[in-house]
Amino acid sequence: MEVQLEATFTDRLTMEKTAEILRSQGVLDIKFNYGGDAQAVDLGGSLVQSVESYAAAEPAYALTVSVEKSRYRQAEDTIVKYGGQLH
Image (cartoon, rainbow, N blue to C red; front, side, top):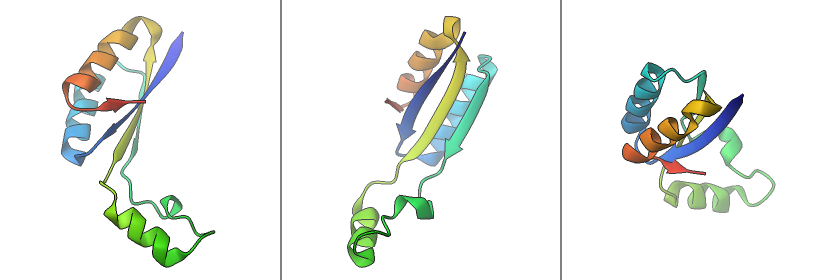
């Protein structure tokens, strides 16, 4: 059975290093979101206000990991060990 973990990192290099370690542990799939996507800005409200609040926020880099259920705990521990915040 496959399960997914979602985590965020404040540093891109740390996220990528963690992903390499997870790959070596045999995870099924890894997806990255490097932040700063245009989709992250709310175009429905005031663009200036959205851009200001977005720029003030700490950058976040997201990682979605698909892993066999039997390896879930190992992947979770690895993410936390390298500074990821699980969601």
